[in-house]
Amino acid sequence: MKAPLTAGATRRFAGRALIRLLGPALLALVLLRIKDRGAVLDALTQAAWAPMLAATLLNLVNVHLKVVRWRQILEARNIRYPLRRAWAAFLSSVYLGMLTPGRVGDVLRIQYLRHDLDVPYAEGLASIVVDRLCDLYVLALFVAVGIVHYSPVIVGQLAWITWGGVAAIVIGPLVFLVPGVAERTLGRVYARLAKGSTDDFGLFLAAVRANMGRPLLRTIPMTALAFGVNYVQGYIIAHSMGLEMRFFDAMCLLAIASLLGLLPISVSGVGVRELFFSLVFPLLGFTPAAGVTFGLLVFFVIYLVNIGIGFVSFQLAPPPAAKATDAERGSLTGAAK
Image (tube, rainbow, N blue to C red; front, side, top):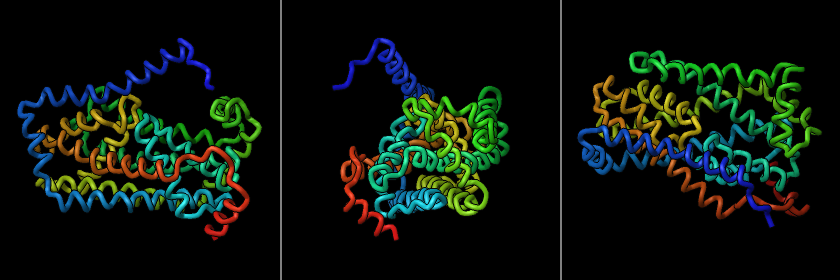
């Protein structure tokens, strides 16, 4: 039986829950400030269904690219994970990850690896870290282009937040690559993630650094392709609404929205994304209501659908609690060959 939460833990949990409500509160505020709120509902219901369906099906392409990239990261350490099982692990982690700020559900993949292949915790965690680093660096490039493109609206505190986010993305992860510095600065963080143990910290750093250099020639292009699929989805969604939006604009919009969605004040960027789109859309010749509608459709097609698929996967292949038997592991190893 788990020990009851202490008063301090209860307060921290309640505080985090309240912070997550800031995004929905922003969405409500944006809707209240729109004069013709009926236009949002009309645009939602009148979007062409065929393009929307095409955009929805592209989620499968996006997920496949990310699963292949994760397997490439594991293969840099001679870990062969069967494609079908990697899909199940990835989708199940998506279910929890998209519902929590910071995508903490990604760590579920470590549990799958330990169960299926007896992969050490440090190796599994390193694969997730490299996976996230690829996303962050490629996103930083797209965001930088978007910020310059939308410089007339990204001013003041919003400009500080976005440029600060780009700087943090670019500079922060470099600590993994500096011998000596990483050991001193990240040891305590790793101990917290590893529940107090630092025995495998060297293995973790070695696994992260093994994916630098030549392996990036495979993982970075795969990451760019995955983001590109998202931007194609945004472009299709805009045109399903009857908006003559350029692909470049869709790319810049979704890139910046993805960065803002990383702020731990919402779930899957709800509210933050719609606020940003309502500010930028008038620059493109569209109404703020169209921006809010676009944001909601992006949430439905890209985020909510993935949450739904992840939920199904979570039920069919829930996070395993115990190690696989030798027979089960043997079948997985054979499937990976």
